[in-house]
Image 1 (cartoon, rainbow, N blue to C red):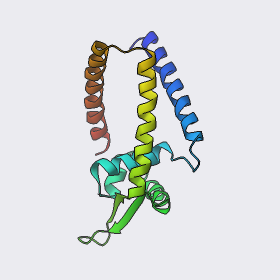
Image 2 (tube, rainbow, N blue to C red):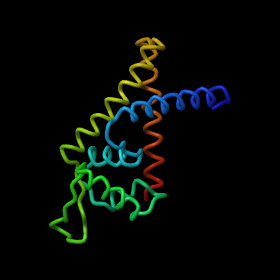
Image 3 (cartoon, helix red, strand yellow):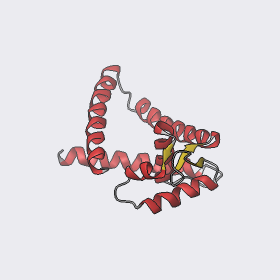
Amino acid sequence: MGPDLEKVINELSLRMRQIRATQEEQNPKGTLTERESLILQQVSEHGPLPVSQIAQVWPDISESTISITLTKLWKQKLVSKTISPDNQRVTMVDLTDKGRVELAKIFEQRRQRFQMLFDAIQVTPEEKEVLIRVFQRGVLFLDKMLNKTSK
C-alpha cells in the first residue's frame, strides 16, 4: 500500500469518524453502536433472519453476545423477534418500521458526510467513475474474505 497512502487513509478515516461522532451527539436519544447499526443493515438487506445466521457474520463474537445485542434492539422496538413456525427453537429477527426509520437516518448521515467531502474536494465525474470501479473491486474482495471467515 505504501506509507503515504496508509497515512492519508488513516487521516481521512479519523476525520470522517469525528464528523460521525458529532452527528451522533446531535441525536437526542441514545445512539446505536456500530455493531447495532450493522446488524440493522444486515437484517434490512437479508431479513428476516434467524439469530444464528446473523451471528455467522460475526465470527469473533459469540452468538450469545449477538443475542444480547438483538435483545437491546428489540427493547428499543427496532427489530421484532418471532419464533419460527417451522422450528420452535429458532428465533427470527426482522426490522420494525421504527428500525427502518432509524437505519434511514444512519444512511442519510453517512450520505451527508460523503457528499460534503466529495463536494469540498471537487471530485470530477471521471474521478467518480474511477472511485466506483476501485470501491467495487474492494467490495468483491471483502465479500470473499468475509465469506471465508464466516464459515
